[in-house]
Image 1 (tube, protein in one colour):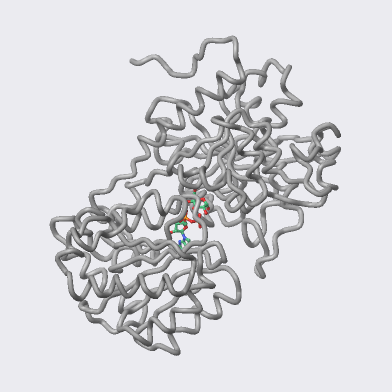
Image 2 (tube, helix red, strand yellow):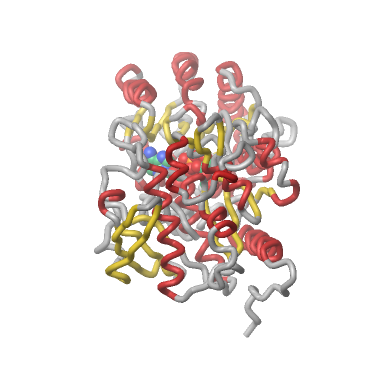
Length: 495
Ligand code: ADP
Ligand code: GLC
């Protein structure tokens, strides 16, 4: 697996949760899964016992010579993790952008180097992967290299590729000049592969060359083959037919489980929610909210960006606060405008809104555990993990019915009290406002329904075992495609 992020080493969003968990579950199913990510300066080498594996690794790319090092450690689940160490590229303040959220201009080169290093590492380890699994645009060049550069190389000629799209809006579009660094020929700089209005579109090339392509929910797979959801790439995904699928992300319940979570003030189970009340009380205190367990509390955690629907929310949250007694606990970072807006709400609504602008694992867990509800008004959402975590913590998700949110949250039925949360369709202030009203009406007037919803939510289980099994099936299909005349040998014999 080749990724720009991986829990617990480097994370900006759900991609890291996925690449941190999936390899471990593949290993449980007795596949030799390994992962390589960059050695960012934020990676804590001492904490994770990261040591040098290869001191001198020379990678030649785009006519340039890069002298790198590769480090290694073993992560939970016995997963070998490798880190590409090249300081000029990775010893920077953040993973993708500077402190003002400007993307680093050389991002295509940084992540192409990671892709090149992944291949070089395989040779150094004499590890011939049956499948190379790449994630998002950053490493989407690799499937093309396997086909174009290494097709007749005995070491890699059988290695298949799988590309997972975690978010189709991020495509890796850069000036056409960067195509020169790929080492690919002019014949692949065409509008069905890497070219897009004279620029390079790395994700599009990956979609063309990967043996199999998937995204992180069935709903989002269906949305992305339409012009509304495809961000321009729908025709190319459509062209892949049944070689493009959706696999829902699992949850690593060793990290996100209220019964065992070490990051929350008290643990709790579906049968005894007293710990949840204590979490609520601590959350109210930490976020400067009035400490009163009877006041409904809505939590929000996420990247403060347009995708997540926070601009729309910013237009109606004041009305919600004025017209109801609800409290909000907000954690996030991202667009400066949204940071300023949500950061200033506590001053204007003291005791009613608490916000923390920044990144904090502890606070994310506290919000999941201590809130009554969890709001995700996303414009689109490939999978979304926080709503799935919320279910397990008995924190009822309020979500827009899109992509993975729609696939994972069952809407409240006012007649029967069935469901696991609340869904609304329109990406509008009106819809958010009305849905929050319904939520509060249920909270105050149909407590038995809330209790029933909480019970159903906490029973939901999005296991990585199941999703890993689907990935293994996808890998098998990729291998068959790469080696049409050979019997598949990837599944190890049982002991
Ligand atoms: P995305 O990957 O689009 O950001 P997901 O819902 O898949 O959305 O995953 C987001 C992940 O990042 C979750 O694990 C969430 O808890 C975490 N996260 C997002 N923002 C923050 C933050 N400010 N502090 C801590 N964790 C955060
Ligand atoms: C992306 C998506 C998110 C998904 C995550 C992990 O960041 O925005 O919906 O859960 O990837 O696949």
